[in-house]
Image (cartoon, rainbow, N blue to C red; front, side, top):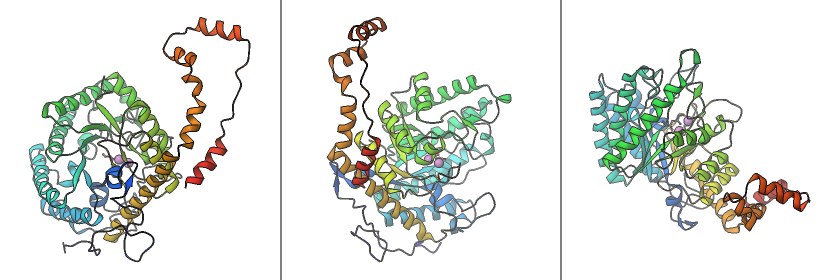
Length: 436
Ligand code: XLS
Ligand code: NI
Ligand code: NI
């Protein structure tokens, strides 16, 4: 590769307002927002797979990007890819990145060879991370691309595939730990099924429970202090996925007694594929105490698949940030760019532009959320709406001190209808628009 790979030479800097070169117009890392530096609130991460591995294919056409390291899947090219990746991390000034084992190094003929390749690039990363001051938000194992996983990894009918997947996770979890990763993610791309004619759901769920438990056990064994995260997605690649959305994962975690050990990584595109809004999934996870991290991207509302576009919709970012930061932020999590440029955006610098533009959209979302939180009018409205539950009687009902008999007797005694109150949706929508 003719390093440097990008034509942009200087790290992108914050400069208020429009300007000619590539600048951050809103992302101002040192600005204090809701009690922390903006960089420490948003904790942006660049993902390896979409930015450096994806070649620009679609079902009807081949590669469009022609990145020099994509010519062949060799260790030499893996090193070149790492050079380009860290060049980009430094130009963007992002604090974090994320990867799958198979993104960073070629798969070998045996697991031992694959592990060795992954470890060798892990050493390259360790040196580059030190120099660039870039940290690892999370690592993960690719348990879906190789044909051995076509019928699932943990939920495979064959225990040998389960064992292979477990061995792969062990290697990446340990590497993530050694690189100081702050989380470990499990996305069950093929943990689902195509047809019930060949599937035993009960067995597959038991297998999945055992697998997750083993991951948590190993995390504790090696002293990994990061958070284990599961990323829900309702479909694609499999038709029915067990980790459909936040609600179904919470049910699984409860069933496996893991609800205190595992949190959730929520992706915008997956939320809308599940028929939810992004903020619904965020609010539900926050309410259940399992909001961990986010994959920040944008799905197309007219298409039924994972388009993984860069998040650019400011009102949507504002609502997402309001939901996240009202709940106290993401802890060890962050905003991971699980997003790819469109296949016509073939210039290397398009990668920089996409990230910078989306970081600005997120920063604007955060700044709007700050206004919404500081002003408090929305939260006050909601608190007032539920205030009946803060009365002595409301609390007694919730505390289990009232039975159906008690409530029936008290309603009959009072003899009056509850008075309906306006939900005031349009008033609140206007209030929201005022912040935007
Ligand atoms: C795919 C997922 C994947 C995970 C990591 O749809 O979003 O990219 O984030 O395995
Ligand atoms: Ni994702
Ligand atoms: Ni996705």
